[in-house]
Image 1 (cartoon, rainbow over the protein chains, first blue to last red):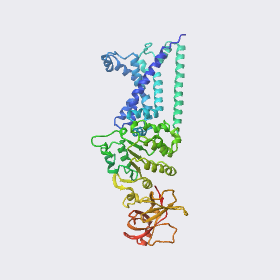
Image 2 (cartoon, rainbow over the protein chains, first blue to last red):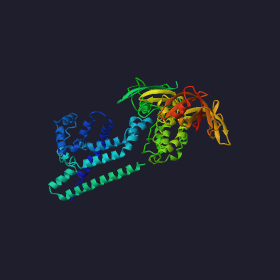
Image 3 (cartoon, chains in turn yellow, cyan):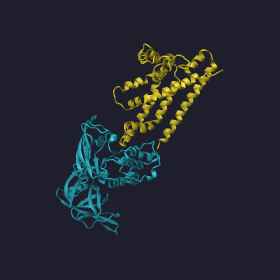
Image 4 (cartoon, rainbow over the protein chains, first blue to last red):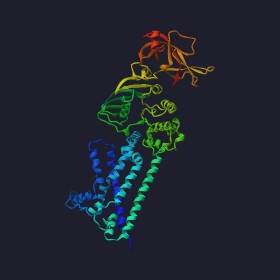
Length: 225
Length: 357
């Protein structure tokens, strides 16, 4: 039996890219949500949380329509010369980012809220510019939040299935990720292969969560007086 | 021009802050008032942490805020000490101290690292992790951290209020030395008349978002029309100098033009300036000067005015021969029995005197 590593690598690449981009985009959103008193804050919070409650197929369906060559995003990407994102790796990254957004924004927002405005104020009185105080005080103090966000985004992207199936399909090396591969193996009754991947996923997920709890436990202990 | 000029007008929800005062460009100015009177808001606005609708903040000629300008916090040469020490928990004591220092250009640094560390007695703490410090140690590190930015104005928001009595007593001498050794003008927020008496030269009394009184600290502390004289520990400040030492009885006499008071012996040079604090509750009154009393400090005084502070107690404001004021808290029964009235000459018997500096 030859083991096909391609879906594993593709999945890791997808999850890694998604996590990195989400941390970059999610941080300002979470910071803004934690600080603002604007009336539309609740509305934005609800939009960010939508992927938590929507069936992935709903998200995938709308994404497919949007990304299709005649959809709003599809037209834009085509006019930019990128072509349609549907059934491409880039399209999957885009969809995964939407799908995992709440898993990044919420832990970060909680971390920023728990921190309160004081540490940044102190840094400001010590001559730190806004960017400086964010990098040297807020991020280090919100580290457990960043760690949780990164791990959840990664793990959640690894585990997605419905969205991928809707807008990615099953193109080897491009959109055929782990969860789709397992489904495929089961469909074609290749249980051995399915077992291998499924057990690997199980062990991986457990390890990820275990590490997260261990590290967070250590950080919060070291900050106690 | 050596002045601190503050004009602030702002609405915080239901609370309106409308404050205008000038403070000397040197020494400690206390912002005094009950909680909720707006003193912290004033401090935050001066620092730039709060943006007021209208305002002027001018520190020794340098404009930090007016109609056109609003200098961002990190461009203001302030040292801010918060109520809770607010040290960065992810940094060691040394890194906390260096955080502000490193962000000040080298040629603007006027206060040497070692001087500050020595003055605040924290040299043994430098390698410690901040969460392991006691409350008093933390606040000392926070004060040192603020000083190391070589501020042109030191802002202190009740730096002692989160500490217990013992920790307060240990920090107070550091604050007094700070005042003597680095001539940094300071705004010091407090609701404790004792702290004000010990530290402040000038004071601004705030009440419901407005300035109720301002001026030199000593006369204001004894004004009966201001809320601070009704506090349980209302007290008066007297300025004098070290007159002589009494070796056999282990006393130091402090001269107050024409009069003198005794304090437990302190090893201070004769002629040095001295400031003493006398609590109103430690002063009793008598019509004649008694020689047959255990009380050493008996000062002739004239009644300026009186005020009922409770159904049983009266606060009497007295003028000493040198023009300084003293407060005495006696029962209303005694006041009526003795016939205490304005202009009356009598003797103040002072049970205890605290030497402040």
